Length: 333
Image (cartoon, rainbow, N blue to C red):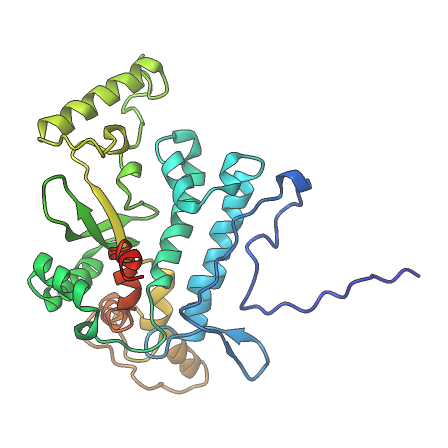
């Protein structure tokens, strides 16, 4: 009777590798997108010995595991399946997004890559402990006040924008760079798997597939480039360090620095539709046991709004500053 040489340890249900269900490829092609580590939120060990992550007062272990471990595994597994034996399997997620955004045949690859990128961006800006916006780094604080008038105005704008979104997506705080204008910050929304990067906004897809000028033909591409160039130059934009073909008509250079995820699988089980003060899971369990459960009465706010308010209290502003002013890391050294 043959015995295996290696004993494979039992995997924790809270840490499933993104490539676990992938078909094995030849070694020459074996390059995968894997779940990146979340160094900002350390793991904890439960009574059963399994490791998990959570953010007290914001995301419970099951909510965190669903939104990060399970969902990130889901989108990366599908991305790896689509990108196998292509150039996309070894690129950074952002590069995959930008290279596939304008190709209708790569719509599925774009969707999974963009969702993986956006979801990671959301989690990497979180703090495991409550934070105070007023105590953010002075440089970032001054810049945000100049752009929005006050930090409270920014908070209300992001919370209200997330609450008003009729459908899942993301709310972004982005740094904008306009030629001959002072650097500023704006709030941007993207629905579903939409990307905040301007290079992914102009989807080269014709309105009528029966026309003889298609998006993939030389004539169609040239027509689009000419329209884009005229639109940009007509707006007075002549800075030579911007490539015109990278932007949609009227687009500007920007970089995301903060992200709020509004997909239902992130907040619904924790906060409910009506913003119940106790999680839906706790109330469901209490009802199954014959009790009414605490916090059964819902408050006037929606669950998404309560979730967005709690999110603001757990933003890691030091991470946001590094993303907003990457050049400062070199000048301080």
